[in-house]
Image (cartoon, rainbow, N blue to C red):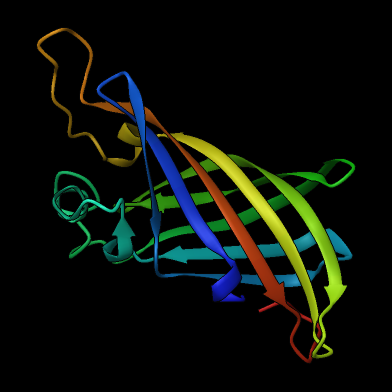
Length: 175
């Protein structure tokens, strides 16, 4: 994975009127297979919850706490694909197991193959974007606060987007 050209981003409703966005600074994506045969490939993503940032340190500390990720105890969020299905053109459906706080659930994600190139240094590269949405409470992320005017502080649905640029290794498996 080319860390400098990859990202894991998310957004969640705040106070029922806006969205808070953030990202994880430390993560790894391992792709086994070929960009020419995505349906026969596998992907594993590992994210360090201690690396979460929303550009607000107090909120980030709260997200790392037992109220949310309990990052000192659960040191990674993981996704491991079980099936990649071609849907149309460059679009794919990716089924796999997502694990957060020790809770493992099957999820379906949307993927877009962004293309394959040979870079100026002779390396083969390819890119992909993966999007999805989860209900955070299903993964033990249950903290919330009821607002005086009705509604809640933090929305249930978390939307995320992963952009990844991979460099094919000598054995032609992406790393």
